[in-house]
Length: 72
Image (cartoon, rainbow, N blue to C red):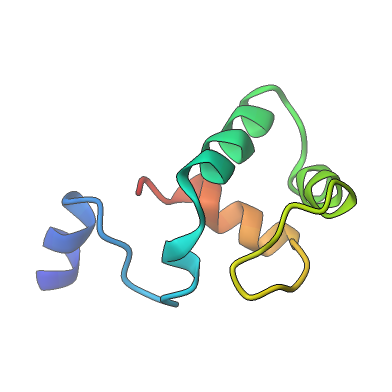
């Protein structure tokens, strides 16, 4: 019940680094997805443009999928 309440308030429960993705990057990812780009294509675009990840790695389609599904 506590986790569900936190989710309703927009809090992310999970990997703390994932919760620190900047809002502008989240918005851009969601906009690209709404424009019809696939998860892998979005990751490739961000990597090609040098958009940094929180931990300095590479964007993956799994990370993109989690961002698209998360409300916060």
